[in-house]
Image (tube, rainbow, N blue to C red; front, top):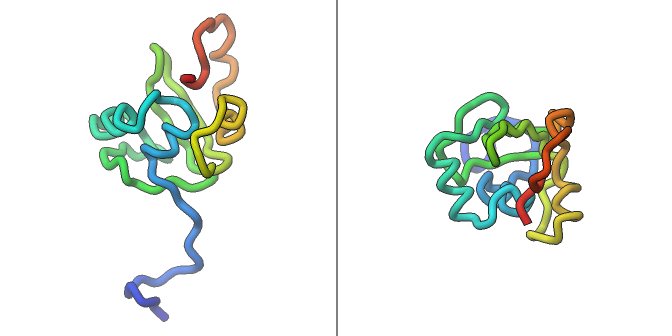
Length: 111
């Protein structure tokens, strides 16, 4: 049976705009910066290139994007409610390529 929107499916999983999540997780200094990177096609969600900043991400999604001269491979662990301090931002994701941090002196997420 279809719901009010005419679409079939189970219960919806909570989602958050991709640009907002990248900003809350402190990968970019502003939402407009994250929007620009997404719009230019430099972000992949679960292997699919995204060009719409409003694309929804959910827990478990894997994001791939370039940052500070390296490729980041991130799994979304939580959606978050706000852009909090860096320690709170680290709880929003799991870095799937932690060995790339060896010898890296720059920041992991932007502050």
